Image (cartoon, rainbow, N blue to C red; front, side, top):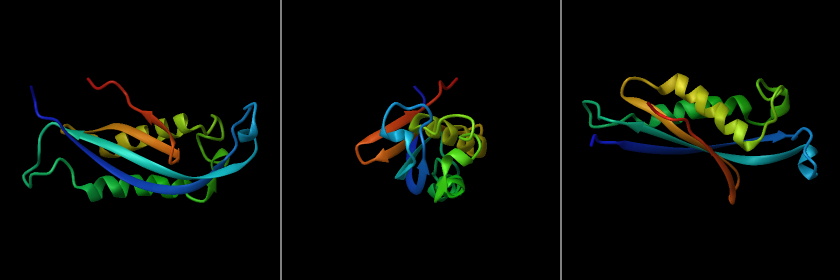
Length: 128
């Protein structure tokens, strides 16, 4: 069985959103101090003995989080078209980070978005 290394980083951002057509309080604008957890997997290490440098993963995650930080998510693509739910936000981060970080050795494994300390959504895709 091949080796598998999983690295995780955690960063955060603050943003407001409105859940369109939601039958409750979340249909009104409200904000969260979101936490973004990124899992990256590698099957082998580089010449330094690293799967990927943590600062590379952190920089990519922070760059994307900065795009949303202190913004109203409903005004930002793609959330101006799709509901800015925790699930959709996690999927967006996953796809954007995968485009930035995936190569022949390293791949984004999952993204978890924490709306509060007790509520999160995790997004992952089948790896081939």
